[in-house]
Length: 425
Image 1 (cartoon, rainbow, N blue to C red):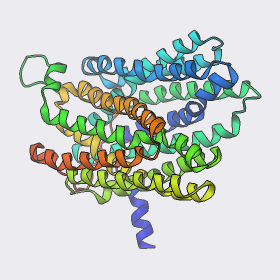
Image 2: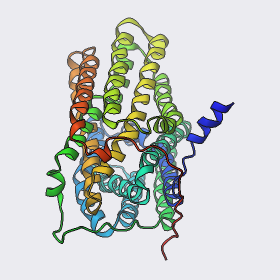
Image 3: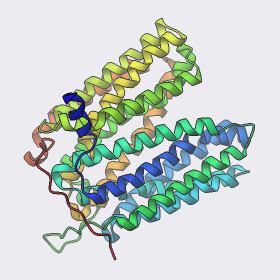
Image 4: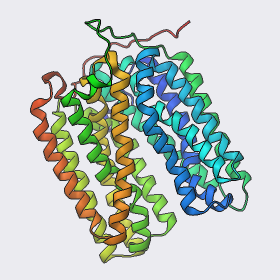
């Protein structure tokens, strides 16, 4: 019973009220994303009769535009603040995803996806900058861990609900999904009325900073380079796993949905306790452990594909999805707080935009390269990706000596002093 109470306390970290409000809005928004995004491809192809190749290009347009928009928004964050840029990004996302309701021809899908892509490119650096600015340094690992929990919980529950609502025989059900998703973006923007803008950091010299200064920060660029490798070889390969599970291991679509739900469930249950356990630990050692954990999970995959089939294969792949989720908890405790600690907070928007860029490129190139390998040798992909994860873990240990002393460890917990900021007038 004592251990249960200790676990439950980890699920309620004493974060500032403004951060709790921000993440409550993020949970609502993630529910909407879970409702709509998993069914976008099906909607475009099965409901709107857009061929698969074109539908794939429409879906990919969101990410491509987001990669271009992110650095631009990073500059805006530093000039006008994360709160305003996040609000604008949310409204663009609402317009973009809401516009899918009216798609009848491919060009309309491209327009909707491009508008959503601009919003998506601005969403992550804006939200991350707000969390970093509103949270004391010693609590940022808890704040970013909570952010990941809210996102995964919302998407998981939304996906389950969307699966019960959507049916290709009734196009109106997809109208409900996209309209509900758009509404959650608007609702999240209303939460921002109760979130103050963080105090603006002041530069010690009068010289204005820019992306050149960020890109010359070698330690930071080493950290985001590592992040790209981890995302591309590890987390992004979850997008290629379903087709492997279906074609090589005979796992049905329903089983694949359960696997992704298990991944989400482990993150929701384990992310905050993991952040608590890792307090006082060396961050680069945690990333090295991440490489080992993800490599172990990936090496299980070809065993299922070569030796098993159907339910037995799905049961073994469930271990992979859970192991990958444990690694995601390690990653979530380290990556964003480390970026925030390394950043010059007068340029926090730019730093967060470059960090988000590494995620975007990882999720773009990882599945693309994985798909090529799958096409030529499906069982080879997983040990190859595992080897890359192990190499990235070794690189993390090598980079540790360059990390400033103050940023090397996840802060140990102190008795919190809650900051309750009043909403702006």
